[in-house]
Image (cartoon, rainbow, N blue to C red; front, side, top):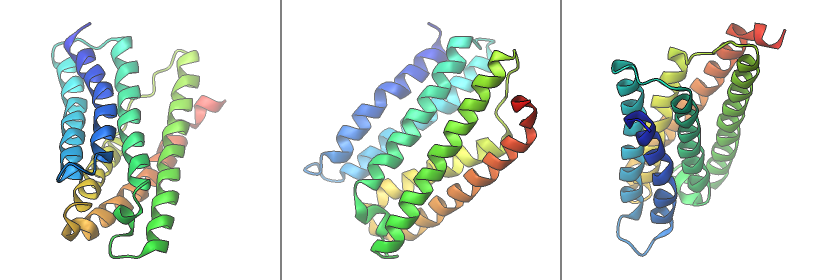
Length: 189
């Protein structure tokens, strides 16, 4: 197993550790620690792709592991954020927090499933659907939103920036999903 694949595996392994720390409320600043673990895991996403391309270590296993690791990390993070209502409620109130949280996470999950489904169909036809820049920007925004939301649970001053980043990431998710569907509509033919 090459280094990029090991980094993807490390990202997958960090997810249950991150989840455990998230729920260890007896640890001071557990949410900040959780954000740190998330940041390290997110950094491996950048590093594995960079190393794979730079040193020509791109492999089918790596493409699979990277995609799975990304989805597991982000979806697990968003799911656990939903379990602590105060994180998304912030200063916007309970109703807004639940609506924005539940609907936003549903949109993000749906987009990931649709894009994965499209890639699977394309693969059966011998076609590879590469990641688009808009998707990379969406990932960047989502990662920062998650970081801010984790930290805001211990440092409430970051609630508003966290919520704003979260709403931006949901909007980018919708845009990138529609863009991906339109650009690759021939997959369904």
